[in-house]
Structure formats: structure tokens, C-alpha cells
Image 1 (cartoon, helix red, strand yellow):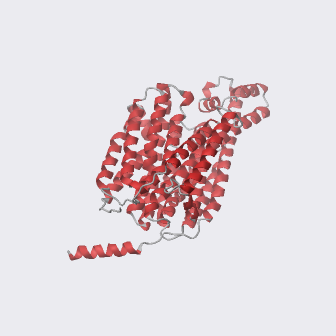
Image 2 (cartoon, helix red, strand yellow):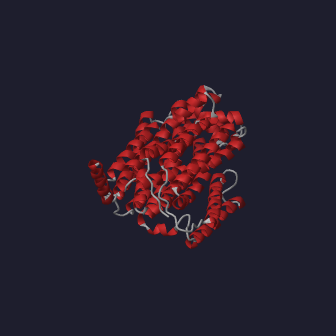
Image 3 (cartoon, rainbow, N blue to C red):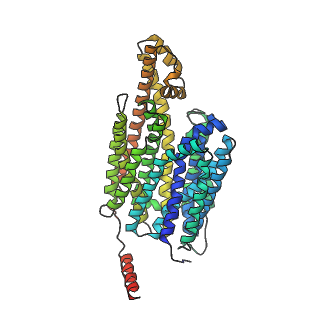
Length: 529
């Protein structure tokens, strides 16, 4: 049964903005506090799982919640996601061990994974195609803004209160978001058949497949070799479950990820493009603060805010891109954005020991502008291709593929960085004219953590002046060359993305004439009264 009730748009928008801001803020605010958390809870060897656990659960739940929202409505599931996020945040603040914090972060990720796609789906529900372009651009800007101020807020909270409050701050604002959505989205249109069919088999094969894949990518090459029994177990299990999932989805009455959606050219192309953008963007960007601090010598505080120019540029481009879509085709904006992103990656790959901070900022502005054009356009394009009863499924699918790209990209480019660093350290050690410097390089080059520590804290290297300078210069050279390799690898993904963007077709925003007529009638009615 379909029921439509009045919606308080301002109240809903405010609730969504608050919810999206704090759920996306959580992805950047934790990084600033991590050194303090490690010092308090210990567990340095597993601290990366504080982020990985959140990524795994939020990524796994995304396509599932989108499909369920088409059947049960956005309001119920969004409020459920907010409550889970609030509970997870509160528990994170009470963690007394690193293992507890990781478990609570996984729970928090379930809530975040429900909130992010549903907020964009609700936008698709309550606005016309033309209005979506504006608001998706605004929401893209909010995501960028959270990335800009996250490190500042995190640093301020840790310095003035305690790290526990980076999680507790989510509780009051989460409750406010839930209250606004509860009151403003009173009773929505629910696209439900008379009999609801939940794809339990799809759920029980998709989640383990994703978890095994992400666990394999996280630990392969570190805890065990890529060509080992453990590696074959993780990836083999992921492949078997993945194939089984595809088979199940083709037979299911209400599939979680409907294979027939890929018959739509825009859906297939935009999701492929989102995956490639995630591969290059999220993986490569995490190395920028390292480069700024280790090679260009900025302070740790400055390194935490190095992404600010890029994010400001991304925010501006998100808003501009939303406006451009009203007059040009998706393909034009997506291709232009990917070309600018490619130029940004190429420029970043040229940075070295002689680069300046201002040069790095300028290059990041180019990179951010390109990504800002692409990110909201992907969502707008796919939402405009399908009727409202499928918006939950297609919106969550778009978020899912980009998130998967980012998660896999981080792992791949981290492996590229470590492998390249080993190779480059061997080269600078061999090329070192001073035998004493060569011996030192051979010793310190065994651990990448130790190398980075020496970059940011040169005083740790207790050597005579000239010898110390020779060793540090060689280490910086190896790191700078490895950084170049990472960005050139990311450049490959982005270049492929340009061709995918060109395949989107000639689609553009369809102006909703019916809605305009209805607005005109409403205005006439108001005047008559």
C-alpha cells in the first residue's frame, strides 16, 4: 500500500545534514586522536583495525539497507541507523581496551553504513530531478567540509577535554537528527508489495564474502604472504561466496543487489566509475599528510590540515557541478571532472624533495576540484534514471561501489607504497658513496615504521653531521620516489575512469514539467484563498 503524507522539508533537511555531517566527521576525527588512544589503551599492533572494522561493517550493510528501505520505508531504517550509530558511539567512549574499541567501532559502522546512503535516498524521494542536482551538490559539500574541519575538531577535543569526547559528541547531535527526521518525515511513500520477500540468502552470502575479501586485502603481504594457504583461504572463500551471491540474486524475488539494474547503461557506468574513483582517490590521498610532514617538513599540526585546500576546492566544485547538470549532460561533467582529477594525480606525482608547500597546495586544489565535479554527479545521474520505488536500491549500490573502491584502494596502494619503498631503499643504499652511510641505511631500511619516524624526528638518528645528512637525504629520496609510484598507480585507475565516463551516454536531467504545473496550481489555490 502506498501512502503519502505531508513532509516538513526544512526539518528533514536539517536532520539529514546533521546526521550526514557527524557520521562523515567520524571518518576523519578519529585519526587525529589515535596517538592519544594508543597511548591510553595500548594495542599499537592492531590499531589500524579501529578504522578497518568501521569500513567493513559500513560497506557490507550499504546495499542491504537500500533494498530494505524500498520495502519498509526510509524513515524507520534511517532512525534505526541513527540509534545504532549513537549506541556504538557511546560504547566507543567507554572502551577500556583496543579490542573493545574495535568491536564498538564495528557496531558504529553498521549505523553509519545505514545513514549515509539513506540520507541521499531521502533527498531523491522528496525532491524533483532538478532540485536533486542542487541538494546532492550541497550534501557533497557537507561531506567535504567534515573532512576539512574533522582534524581541527579532533585535535581541539583531545587537547582540551579527552579522546572519549570525539565519540560522545555524536550522541546529542545524533538524537537531534533522529528527532528532526521522526517529526519531519511523518509518514512517507512506502514502495511495498503485498507480500514482502527479504533476500536472506543474499544477505548471508554477501556479508561473509565482503568480510573475507577485506580481511584478505588487509592482512595479505603483512600477516601472511600473498601466495600462501591463508591467502587462498580468504580470497578463495570470498570468490566462492561472491559467485554464489550472484547466482542467488538472479533467482531471488526481491534481490539485495538486482543484477538486472546493470542492464541500464548509466547505472553500470556510474558504479564502475565510482569504484575506480574510490580506488585512486581514497588510497592515494592518505599518503599526502605523510609526504607533507616527512618530505616537506611541516609540523604535525600542519600535516593534519594539509587536506584543507583540496577539500575547499572539492566543496566548490560539488556546488558548481550540481548547477552545471541543469544545462549539460552527465557525460560532460563526469568526463571533465575525471580529466581534471587525472591532471591532479599527474601533478602530485611530480612532487619531490625540491617541492614547496604552496606547490603541493596548488596541486591538491586541482585534484579536489576534479573529484568535486564527479562525486555528486554520480549520485544525481543514477537517481534520475530510475523510478522512486527503486531509489533505495540504486542509491545504496552507488555508495557501496565507491566505498568498496576506497577500501580496496587503500589496501592496494599501501602495498604498492611498502613494496616501492623497499625497492627504493635498496637502490639508495647501493648508490650511497659513503660505506658508513650505506651500513646505516641497510639497518634502518628494514622497517617502514622506523623510516617514517626518522623522517619526522631526525633527532632520533644519532650520527655525526655529514653522515646524518647523507642518510636522511637518501631516506627522503626513497620516500619521495615511492610517493610518486603511488600516485602514478592511482593515475592508472583515474585514466581508465575517463573512458568509463565517456560511456555513460547522452543522459541529462529530465525537467519535471508535471511538478511545475502542480506548483502553479498550488500558487493559484493559495491566491484564491
